[in-house]
Length: 512
Ligand code: XMP
Image 1 (cartoon, helix red, strand yellow):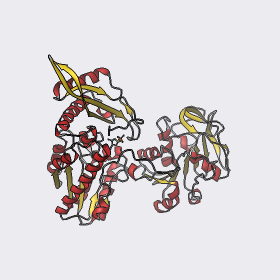
Image 2 (cartoon, protein in one colour):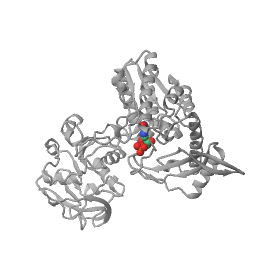
Image 3 (cartoon, protein in one colour):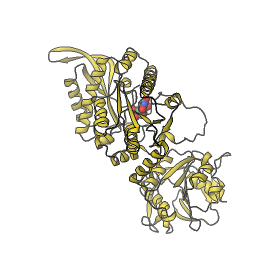
Image 4 (cartoon, helix red, strand yellow):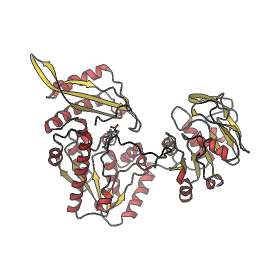
């Protein structure tokens, strides 16, 4: 294991990604709990992240002494480099030159860190983002790469295997960064790169068996990738001790409910309870205009329905969830203030406490794309595993204003045509999320010789890496024209189509 100490950088997760891509398991811990994690995980190397803090601040976070004196290989990035230097007896100065973005460094000296990538005297692109910098090295250190703006771009104490870089090797704008990190874990720390998804699967199955024994597990299946992969994995571990409950709220996309039921019940033979609860949800939502009330109503009904079904099954000891690593990592906060709720996300939060069940969360250690790889490893079809994210409250939040069964029908048809066009154009995988929204607005049009007065459909498509920020997708106008024509011709109830060109922020991905 490689331990990654998080000092609050925006890109700490990327460090973990790069290390795992090198075939080595890694875990992120906030600096406040680094000492305890270091003792329990017993890592073979430590990486220190960047930070919004400055080493020159009074309360700047430190690396625990236990790590510094462990004799293990250490790699400090940006703030990590600076605090390393300071704690080992060097000097840091703030605010001399601030450097952000692309920079070029020159290699001064060969090092195992550069093996197979960077030779002495060559220049390389890196990505900088810092205000402070090292001005005096601790004893034992030397400069092995430098640039005009960052004379201490890469420093090393080869004997103690401690390295520090001023730039960010974990971002794609440092083209050789992934290989630097892989040299650190393989060549310097001597860790073998044998962490693969097949190995993960075997270990996860063994863990589930050990935890569950001969007891029962229920899993709330939403039709999404995460809960599906979790269910298939758990089924492989404990077979029919697992029952899935699929609460069908009638807010799914075209044919989605049938696909889920067919795949789980017929293809995988996983015991599945399909709760057709459309009437319950839609009757409760009809006429409700407030987005937060809609979300909360759906969340509440979901929990009540799930609970009632679980009772009918005679209960279970465990509840399975498709929680992912980004939901688990404790975020490092410097402001300490509460963050504002933009939307109350709907999931099974609160269920385990209410139902007094233990959790089984076999995907807790994985990133989204790793879950997709695991899904393929488990034999789930590509088309299913590669699906774009879909929100828990479903089409209800893509129908601003009050929903009705007829509006949902219109939206479902338009959305299916839009996605069909996207797949045909080969764009599905390039887009994070694409969907139609049915606006509560009617406009005048002319079809044949007649006047029409029908709904407006908005199309949305965004690129994103994590859903936190997003840019609208830059379609070719001919593509949009073609999608609009098909929607207006084929869907009764829509006579106008518009495209949403809002990024996030200031917009959100969903409309409600
Ligand atoms: P927003 O609209 O907040 O969406 O920019 C960010 C990502 O989260 C998804 N989303 C949800 N997912 N339950 C979910 O499971 C929800 O209530 C929910 N609301 C939004 C959204 O589709 C996008 O991927």
